[in-house]
Length: 344
Image (tube, rainbow, N blue to C red; front, side):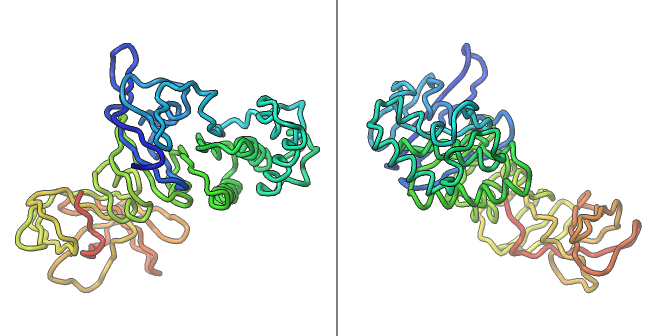
């Protein structure tokens, strides 16, 4: 059993469509697990059930072998950081961070010791006497994080905490969150719709769709080996075609294009997919994994060009970093390496 367990969690409103359906999730102590998915997939609802802000219709929520399903939010001892920092504008950084401890009637000396220690961990000591309006967005986000951590929570919950920051600051803050999380060893659940943000800091990722977890694995495995078409599309695979097994690891599509795939799979029929970055435009054909087509729309991506190549399989997107620039109407040969084709 994991440190955190969600067992057969179901939630619907007024008996209508299920928001969550028999959701199961196990998190080990000290892990940072992200809930990833598009808007409406159920990730924030799952986090709110963990926090105690919503009660499920059925199922169990267990932390450290204790059933917390019906325990109210104020008795769960969790730290929460949301999109809006929700800092008190009339309080200094020190007082904002100390707020939860004061509510617990803790000794003043103990409060001072705990607040100073967490300000040091979050690199905020020099800002202790400042007010939120005197700080940058990234600094205010660290204050919100410090306030959540100072109460020494069993679980840290982060709901899209970086969405209000600009792109450069998001990158530095996600590194900061991971550094703090690892230093304190605190079990963390992170909600985001941003794949790059999620993969960069997570130990494991739960990819959600329509109230269900379609894949729960390490970022590396999800990136390389998506299990379903939804997961593949969500994380950047962009070319899909139906194939049928011919012999061994050899597959053919409906037009008899032949593909040798490096990975063992017992299915006789499947949907194959490959990332645009993994397709090569080549000048010499090989016996297998070659598709011929004609260049359509060309898009400049900065470090490469993306070509829409029209083939008998349909439109294939290819990202090419070579020095040669292809023109609309050019005939090309596409090599799809067998170690890059995934069956979903």
